[in-house]
Image 1 (cartoon, rainbow, N blue to C red):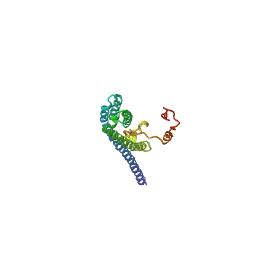
Image 2: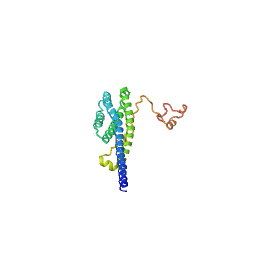
Image 3: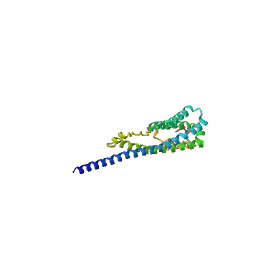
Image 4: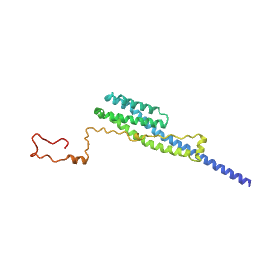
Amino acid sequence: MELIVILVIIGIVVVLGFVLVGMYNGLVSARLRVKEAWSGIDVQLKRRASLIPNLVETVKGYAAHERETLESVTRARAMLDNAGTAQQAGQANNMLTQALRSLFAVAEAYPDLKANQNFLELQRELTDTEEKISYARQFYNRNVLNYNTRLQTFPTVLIGGMFGFQPEEFFEAEEEARQDVRVDFSIGERPTIPPSQVATQVQTPPDVGTAGAGSGPTPGT
């Protein structure tokens, strides 16, 4: 009888051991998936930052006096390079997005800059990179949510506390920065008039016989 009790106790201990090992390995795997997902964001952030110096130099050739705008882009890029955590990187990336939006808005006043092929290519690459960052952000945040949920759920919370697992930070995007950096650089494109306005602009020409000498149609009527 005592032997049976001992075997039962040993069996329970073995099962608990396997459960604990499984929970520990699950946390390790979830944390590794977070790190892997972050590497995808990091690659795109570095690619985006590498485009900024060339962009700034290109703009300087046409709008050198836009010093404040150019400096804000450079500062945001430096913050992105020096970011040490996901939260810091997210904040710096949001600042860079806003700075680029201001820069592209300024570019609208310089037709020669808008027509510059190097500028157009940089703008296209920056937009493409921002879209990739957006997709990578979603993948990363899903993995962070899964890992943090595991870490805060009983009984894995006990394993996490015992072995020093720490929650991971989300890579956040501000509402203003969620929209991609898109600027239309079409040249010579005429604005489209809505049909409702077209109808009001089509009118019957004035009767020549009734028009007074020297009179003519009033502009805009």
